[in-house]
Length: 235
Image (tube, rainbow, N blue to C red; front, side, top):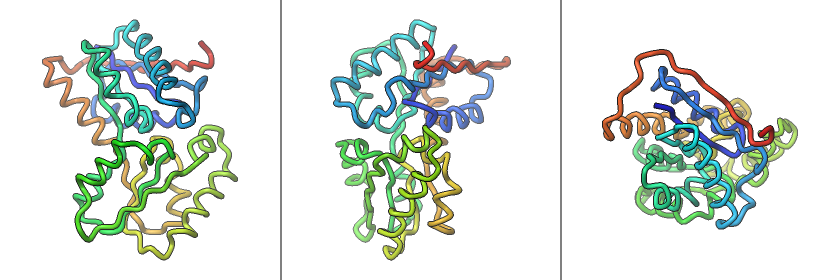
C-alpha cells in the first residue's frame, strides 16, 4: 500500500513527519505543488482542477489512501474529491478547533490562511465546538504561508508581530495553527506569544489515517517503507 500526501508546498511535510511517527513502515509519495503555490488566491473551480490533477497523479502511482495535508484544500475541496473519486480514501486536514475547545481553553486564537478563515467548514467547526463562555478569534494571516514557503524571515516576523500587537491584550490561552506551514515557525510564534500552547492537527490527521486504513481492511506494513517527494515545479 502507498499513501499519497499533498500540499501547496512544504507545509504538508509537518503532516508527513507525524504520519511517519504513527505509521513508520508505509510507503509515502509526497506531492509538493510548488508550481501552483499559494492555493489561497485560487477560486474554487480553479483549485478543484488543480487538486484533481494531483489526485490523478497519486492514483496513477498506486496510492489508495490520500492525505490532503492542506487546510485550504481540505476546507474547499475534500467533499468534491470524495464525490469524484469514490474508490479512494481521503483524509483531510482542518484547524484543530475541537481539540482546543475540548481542552477547555476559553480564549482561542485561530491562525489560518484567509481562504480557510472564510470557509464554511471553519464556521461549522466553530459553531459546533464553541462553548458559551469561550471566545474564538479568527485571524486570516495573509501572506504568512508564502513567507514561510519562500523563507522570507523578515516578512514572517512582521506578520506575527502585527498579530501579537492586535491580540496581546485579549488574554489568549491557546493558539490553533490552522495551516500546515505554521508549525514550521513555532519558535517565532512563541517568541511573541510566550507560554501559550500551540495546537495543530497533525497528530489527529495521522491517527485518523491509521484508523481509516484498518477500517477498510488494509494491512499495516510491517516491512521498511520509503518516502518519495515529488515537486510539481520540477515535473
